[in-house]
Each structure stands twice: as C-alpha cells, then as structure tokens.
Image (cartoon, rainbow, N blue to C red; front, side):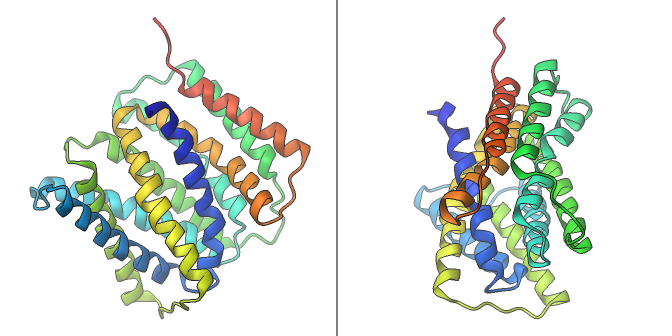
Amino acid sequence: MIKILPFIFVILWSSAFITTKPLIDNSDPFSALAFRFFIVSIGFYIYCIFTKQKIFINRKNLIESFFSGVLFHGFYLGGVFYSVSKGMPTAIAALIVTLQPILTNVLSGPILKEKVSFNQWLGILLGFLGSTMVLGWDIGSGIPVYGFIATLISLIAITASTIWQKKLSNNLPLQVSNFYQALGGFTFHLLIIILFIDPYINFTKTFIIAMSHQIFLVSFGAFTILMFLIKKNSASKTVSIFFLIPPTSAVMAWLFLNEHLTTLDLVGFIIASIGVYIATRSRKN
C-alpha cells in the first residue's frame, strides 16, 4: 500500500494546478486560500475529535506545526495562486516549483545530514530534463515580473517547509499536525487580507466545484500523503516525485482542458518517470 502512495499523491497534487485557474477567475487568491484552509482546519479538528486525538499540545510542537503550515499553505500556495492571478501560466509555475528537489538535495546534506547518492542526483537531473521537455521554455516576454517573483518565493517556501517538516522532533499524530498546519495557513492568508487587499469571492458553480476538489482531494488527501511520506522517507527521496507533477499536469490538461500534447511531451514524461525511479529506488546492500 505504501508503495502506491507516491503515485496517488502525484495524481492528486497535479490535479490542483488544473483547478487553480477556475478559483482565481472567481476570487482573489488570498480569499480563496483563506476560505479553503478555514474549512480544512474545521475538517481536521472534527476528525481529531472523532478519533479522540489530543488537540491541546505543548507550545513547542504547536509552534513547529503552525510555522510549517505558514510556509507550506501560506507562502508556497499563496505564491502560486498570486502568480497565476498575475498571468503566470500554470505550466511555467509548475516547472519553476519543480526545482524544489534540486534545492532540497543541496540542503538536506548539511541540514539533515542525509547522504545524497550519485543515483539520486542522476535521477533528479533526468526528472528536471523530462519536465522541461513536457512544458517547454516558451516563456517569451509575457511572463509577469511579480508573478515570476511570487513563484520563486513559492519554490523557497516549499523547500524550506519540506526540510523543516523532516527536521521536526515531534511525533504528533498526522491529523493533529495537519490541523495546526491548516490553521497556520488560514491565519497567514487572513492577515494578508486584513492588511493588504480588498477580498472578494464569487460563489459560482465553477468556484464551488474547484474549491471542493482542492479541499477534499488535495488538502485532505494529497497533503496528508505528503506529510506521511516525508515522515517515513528521506526528504531528498520524497521530493523527487515532484518531478512527475508538471508532466502529469500537462497530461491532465490535455485530457480535461483540450490542451495540445506532442510526441516530445510524451518522451519528456517517460524521461521524468525514469528519473524519479532512479532517484527514489532503494539500494540493495
């Protein structure tokens, strides 16, 4: 069962890029995310009560989980949503964020004392090459500066969040940790709304469907799987599967949004898949 979790995660996480644009078309990015994590917080709270998990934890564990949520749900997702709202193509945003495994591997050695093998580096390079082939480099002059900067912030945030999550010393139940992380994300976006923007949400049918998808399949499903994988595996191995997200998103866009998919895209998908396999496979002694 554990072996299939990375593939479920990739499918669920990739689908989030498909439903981000409908959300942005009907709301500002931070109101959408504040609403999303308000509901997610309530959901995880109810689940904790239902499973009789202890909600009140010590201050150290609370701060650790809350800050992880600020990084992941706040800076990372806020940056991605904001960049899309400024006109950044979701495919290019996905490709930039896909640099995360490279940064994580560079930092996991000195920070987490993890040994990054030659095979992992080879797999990461192949993964990035394959993702680039799928998405292409058709950036041109239309890429918004603020959108690009926001995506870079997202890249730094998700890298820092992954390393931070792996470095945490607490052994909180997953649902309790997820509750405080969702609360951290909600608080971050609420502060952005109060301090900087004029919030709005149009509760259209499209918005409700897209938001339901991101709440139930992404926040409850994919994020929980990711936290489980980080806890069970090395950080460098876990994030290597992120290279499958851009090509998977491209395939989903082809299936559901009628976007074009070329032979080069398919070759890139195969190369990225091989790279992830090389980077994440267990070495036999």
